[in-house]
Length: 254
Length: 304
Image (cartoon, rainbow over all chains, first blue to last red; front, side, top):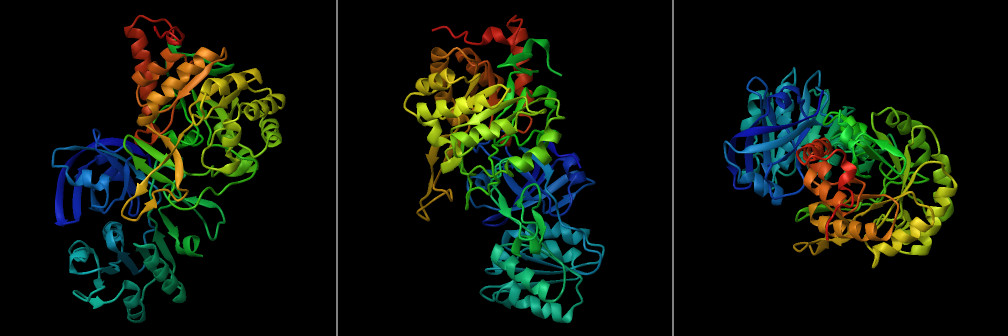
């Protein structure tokens, strides 16, 4: 894998919900190489913000040479992205980091919030259609099902308010899924508290689990050390950007 | 490969180009090999190395401010022993000069670091007396001329390598600091390290950085850095390496005109990991277009 810096044309920047958008960028050399769980650092070339922003790749169309980013409008960087239009140019640096191991058997993918984004590409890449379990606050946060369903054996949904799926958190429903379905690997991305619970349940069931971390980043390539944490197994400092963002759950949560 | 016009020797360190990667923003050089040809980088200044490993500061370490960034990494590094064993042998193979940036908690430790790094593969030492993010990171030494001189003398006594002392801008008189380290034997001065800064999230009423304050870098600091380089150039005879907010060949030329013999590029590497090669190329084009035989003709050529 060679990391590249490429200007790509924005082909689409669709509104999914008032705070979530889906951007398609034509960067063939990056799209061809990126694996599930890897990320890119992006910035419009004449952008107002100084630093690039990291996004996991939600999916690719490697034949067309496109990457897809599903992102939540949270701060200045994503607000600037949200204003971009088809035809605009985005500078893309990637593919960066180490992604998910592709599970051999039937996997369970667990996602929360915008952390669900990389699970689409992972689900599509699984040789056996995985089970997917996602959670959100309410109906507006579980639109992901339409992107996941084509690649999933089944998509389980929880919402905090019970407006769709089961009321509660993903980790409340996960024991039921594990009790009824045979799963050989768990991959998760979302809020830290959710991933900790997912990792704990996977461990209790003796299933290997990978977690994808999120962090603020300055460089994305392992030099600024803005995103490091203490590895619980290796006892070394680990860089979310260069050593991860995907790690064995034990390395993150002990 | 860059041209003859750009080849320089700064304080005895031979470089293909006077454009270097600044400490803390360029890793150990190898991290950038996908994005540029290291022949077009004059030298790599390593992440700051300390006698013992450091985990760095807790909490959020990076924040963005207009045309700039704040960092409070806190000198995270693997420590001298692991650096020498695992990193230096690789870095020494790179087709660029390798300058090791060192920090320590006492004058004696600075000397010990220098002695331990008086080995093959190290082309020079950059003495960090100016990290604003840790108590032991040298800011104490970097703001007191006597202490800065003591550190410089201790390092000089224990090494045969060229010694570059990196100054902090967080002082009242940068010229006084520069003269103190020159008198103590420094071979070269680099400036500026980051400027102490702060940013607040008003919704949460909390600082953006876990360490509350941090070091500011990026294009917003360039006028301050340039002014300080110019002041130091008036005050000392030894060569100067200028840094602070450089993003383009034009910026680099400003620093050279102000009196710097070379420049370092820092935060801009994050926005564009290929920028140093672009600056090297831009500098070469500028020399050609202006009929200059060598980059040294620009150094200190400011007309006032």
